[in-house]
Image (cartoon, rainbow, N blue to C red; front, top):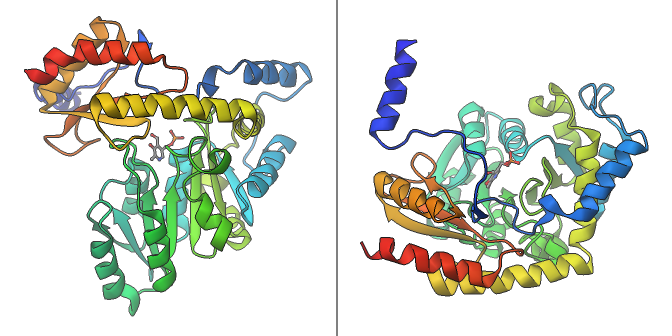
Length: 370
Ligand SMILES: Cc1ncc(COP(=O)(O)O)c(C=O)c1O
């Protein structure tokens, strides 16, 4: 097909061609921030569950025969754990975000979204019936201006943000966002993808203090389960009415085979570990390495550190050199990040040795000067 060949050649000319590469070298790129993807207790739990006869596939959508005890137990556990009226488990965070944005807002509503929200929110915005408007990243004045403009005419106003931004590692002003949502009677949707398991009491996320004080009247949260939790899927937490509505109306939930029961079981085990002393120790190690990371490379002090290189060609060249030096770090280019901001996305883990991070910094130095 010539049109695809042409498009691929163009991507190659622009240094934007992507290919699948198996992991190789020291992990400075995955989202396994807490080492849970290789946790021995999760491995044992998986083996024991299968040996005890847990079915492999869910064999149906959740509203048909695919609703198993593992899904029900996880959702009940998560609702209590995150102090929500209810929780709903999706096969992926992408699916959950897409479902939120295409199900909750209707055609009379307005969605206001931060300029740096994830592709899964953006794809939901393409498919939603609600009008939607972008505000500049973390700019509360710009958001308030939009709230004022649309408050009278809109039905419900939805605000979509992340708590820790996936490509920049900076943190949203969540208290301000929540206060604006309350003041303008709006609903705040917070994607906690890069915060869950790490920040907030027991790693319950950066919205935890807000939830503890105010509940979910103006809030919906998404906890993706394939990053610090180390498994896969996405848990939406909200009031019981919102969850019930999603069960009845969310097409990605209704018309899709339920995730493997094992996946749900392991997410629950992982949350239990993250709330235990083991989890607390992992967080302590992660925060130490984050402090070193910030000292060496700047950034917001979280586990995601953008090393901005500018042009796509430079990002690819430096990533390749680092990979040849034994570090698994990848070039992130547009459209994932804005034009002219191609970068290495350094991702830290509680299991990373400080000396290794120092070694990476030394190896990178000549490229930062040139
Ligand atoms: C902020 C954010 N939200 C949602 C997702 C999607 O989650 P998942 O990988 O579970 O589909 C990602 C994944 O990269 C993400 O970074």
